[in-house]
Length: 76
Image (cartoon, rainbow, N blue to C red):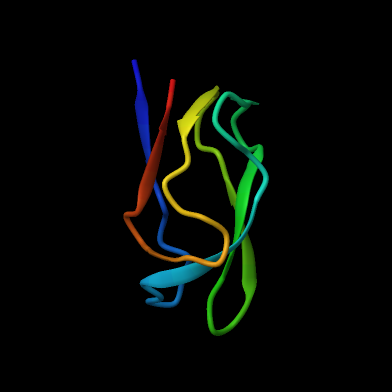
């Protein structure tokens, strides 16, 4: 079953962040807690970990894009 990953709340009421770097691409296998990407907000750069094991199906945001909390990509 596919898991819909949504950009989590990155703290302190911040509702968006710039995708600085992806560490995954479509087809990559992930384990829980592997780092998916780095997101920068006005205060810090934060590493976002995977909440589950799976295979990345598609990445919906390119590096440099501002993503809002709740933005997503899918993996099994």
